[in-house]
Amino acid sequence: MKKIGIVMGSDSDLPIVEKAVDVLKEYGVPYEVHIYSAHRTPEQARAFSMNARKNGFAAIIAAAGKAAHLAGAIAANTTLPVIGIPIKSSTLDGLDALLSTVQMPSGIPVATVAIDGAANAALIALQILAVEEKEIADKLEKAREAARETILAKDSALNI
Image 1 (cartoon, rainbow, N blue to C red):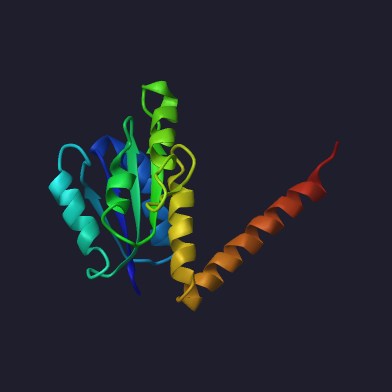
Image 2: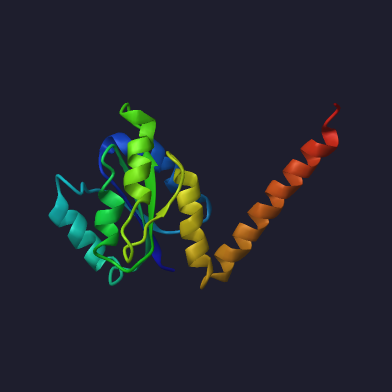
């Protein structure tokens, strides 16, 4: 099975990134986590993204706050799917990171989740794997059914 790459711009992003790691662990999907900055370690970020396909990755999750250029820098150097997680910081409550991640130029797409939306980033990566991995597809279907049943049970218990 191919693995998922997770890159964060700073170790301060780790508490959010761990939510993506938890989802990947739950599904038994291999992953690697790295700290590469688009601005402070651009050579390492570029090398990682340029070699990701040959190193067995199916998709890359990139998390960054403030200027949040990391997902775009990664996407510029690979044709693998890149999923951006804008990280909330003290600056503009993460709106700056969201706009920097989502407003990519034509031809260099980055799928972008909500501010601090690491769990959804991992789920998108799992959906990408599920195109080829039936076991992952089946687990995703079961999780959706469990969520549906939970909501229906709450609806039945509603006493208003």
